[in-house]
Image (cartoon, rainbow, N blue to C red; front, side, top):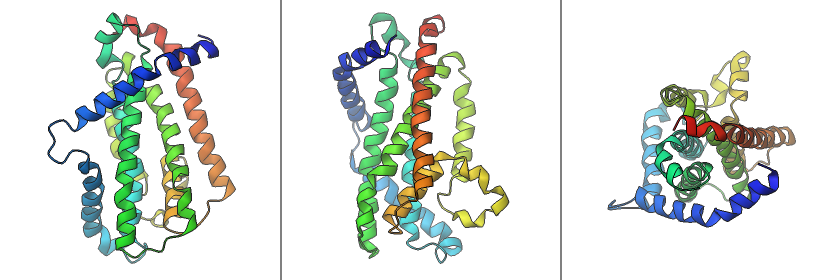
Length: 260
C-alpha cells in the first residue's frame, strides 16, 4: 500500500474511528453509577494510598510527593492500559474483519484514543491536588501537553507492534503481563531515581516512559524547562517507535487472515 493510499484509507474510515471511540467510551462506563467521575477519583484514591504507604520513606526527600506519585501513575497507566487492550484488538474482532472491509488498525487506534481521553480526564485531579497542597503555579505548566503528546505517539507505535504480533503469538498477552508488572518497578513512579545506584541507572535511561514522566514532573512540579538532550531523545523514541509500528503492522496485516 502506497503512502497516498494509506492516507486515503485512514481519512475514509476516520468517521468510523470517531464512532468507534464514542461507542467504546460509553460502554466503558455503562451502568456505572459514577461514570466518568471514576477517571477523576481513581488517580486521587491511588495517590492517597501510595502516599500513605511510602510517605515515611520518600515524602521528606520528594517535594510535593502526592503530585510526584500521581504524575508517574498517569502516564504509566495510560501506556499499560492502551497497549494491553491493543494487543488483542485484531484477533478479538476477527468476525468483523471477515464480514466487513474495515482496516484492522482502527480498533487499535480506538483503544489508544480512549486511554488517552481517560488520561486527560485523570490529569484534572493532579491540578486540583496541586492547588490543595499550595504548590506555586508557574509558566512551565503550560508545557504540560508536551510529555503527554510524546507518550501518546510512543504508545501508539508500541500498540501497533503488539497488535500485529498478537495475532500470531497468542501467548504474548501472558508474557506482556509480566513485562508491564516489571515496568511498575523499572519506572520511578513512587520512588526517586536517586535511590538507584549510578552504575545501574542506564537500565532506567532505556525506558522511554521514564523520560516522559521526568519531563512532566520537571514542567509541572519543578518549574524547569527540560534540556535539549532530554527532549531530543524522548522525541526520537516517540517518532521512531511510531514509524516502526506502522511498518510492522503494514508488513504483517496481509497475513492476518491466515491466523484469524
